[in-house]
Length: 188
Image 1: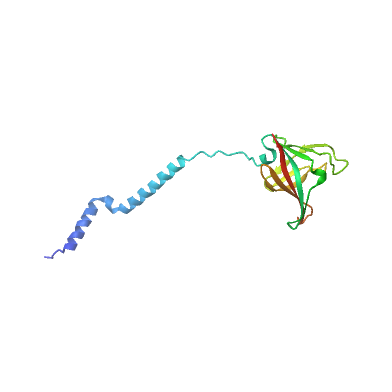
Image 2 (image 1 turned 135 degrees about the vertical axis):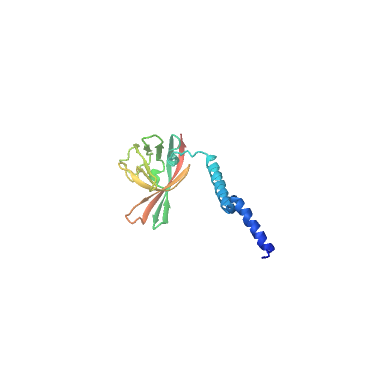
């Protein structure tokens, strides 16, 4: 008769124990499934408790218009070449001009030219519309010292609640430009 070693008996007992309990054979699988299930439940709970996202309407143009209207005046101009400022100067004939942007759906715009005229044919009041294109940061408006009859596309370099800097290029290569600095004088 063969003698049974202690290790053999212990192994047989473990096999017997595992064969009688089917869950112990799948212990690691069950543990993994439980972990995945817990992660799924936590994810669902986290998503269900988050705030509802409500889109806010685009309001960047409020910088130009305020709630109803905003009036700006020119502080000074800078002449640039290849991105460097070569001269800074006030535009004396336009220092008393006022540019009012309205927040209405028509985007009404008024340029009230002051007593100092850049051109003798310049009217006292110019009424038109303004546009803003977000993709190119372009504000289009009439600037009487450039033209009293047509709008000018201006690149918005900087704008906040009380100052803005606009730029117009003078050549096709975009090497020469004027940067026009505005400040707010009234807001409704």
